[in-house]
Length: 326
Length: 290
Image: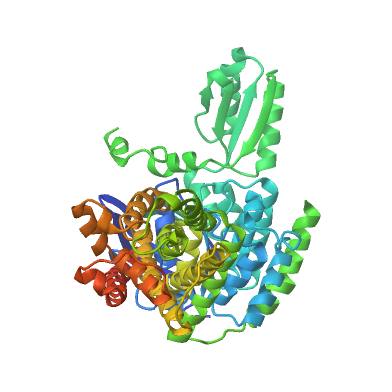
């Protein structure tokens, strides 16, 4: 679409709310047609970044371009090319699903006929045909979110912003959102997605930036980031507390670091690298050979907390001072 | 589950992509787009009013109940200077009361328009921001007309009449709607300033005394002198008195300049309020939507 092939460029954005520095030199470059994940805990500045990039908020310093248009100087050109789905379903509660989509279509500048047709297409796509004539008040959380996502796609946006699109959704609705995002990207839309879940960023995003205190502290593909933070974890829950020490010894040999022991839960975790299933099989076999009974064993992605621990040496949400003084 | 996600992604490839290039726009800009956006949002407001009628009904029912109660229960004990028909005296005051109570709905509607999550979506769209205010003002004026028609119909049922020609009849309607317009802008200003839940606790304690300390229900002459003067200078009194004069309904009389010039002041007062409220509302909206 743009000659440079970049859909989003943000340079040194600073934005404060009173004494709180929400964005503190935020930089971002997103290639056209890719999915970009902004990963960070609550209060890291994800939502503020989305607000600044979608013209909802002004900012104190820096600059941003969406699809080649300056966010501050050409907000209307930007608005004609973006779609936004926030953390709360931004639809009218009293109107029904179809009325919502037609209204938004008209406000996007579509002709009456195009707005009608687009509403019907989107209702069908998001499996809302049966609920189309029902007031949104009667919708479930998942249906609302789907309607919200449909609304943000009305003008077939070049750049779609999804601010924590699956927070609070059941797995089925979450999968529908994910498959919708994948389909859009296939069609050439650029997606900026914010999330608190590494799993979600990993599933959808081509590149991920980790946000902390209003700044990007790490950036790369999911694999690059994972190698920086130590990759997957194996969790073992033992039947007996007495086996903790011996099991830790076994896992230390398999894993890449010191196992974390939580005696109260009879649980041991260790960071591993390599093929997930192979390493899991190896762990099961080694424990079995040592005659240790495991009640539960599994391999999982690191949590956001662990990502943070790996990148910053402190837990997500902890103030920076504590980390530097310790 | 598997089948759901498969069918979703196939239909996405055909539907979403197929139309990407075909989204047909009106191409309207500037004032034309602002007007079309206002009409779209006006339709939304009308649907809201029809589906959630309780709040607007309440602000209409209270004055109508007052009209019936005062007209039949107390009417016999209240004497109006120079006339016996209290119910004919009442109606102008009741319509003005309806106009004034409408302020509550205007303000809470405006507040909700700018505090709900959907407002964030509006602001991320290429929509004329001013359409939120103009659609609110238009809708509230339409509501004012409907309410006036309802009160007049109830008035006719209980024996009210106007005694002058159609020109005077519609002049009075014009004066009443001018007051409504001024109060609508007051409501917009209030709704942009306080949250929706704060509207009723502010409006009713303010508007109820304002409608009673006037010539709406009794003659200010019969109040304690200081209160009577306040009542005569109340803008509501000028509108009520002017309406009664134009309809040939019994009035309260009085020698003061303000009472003698009711028709002039019934136009001047709302214009003064408009000169005050409109710029303040626009300034306030610019700040809210910045």
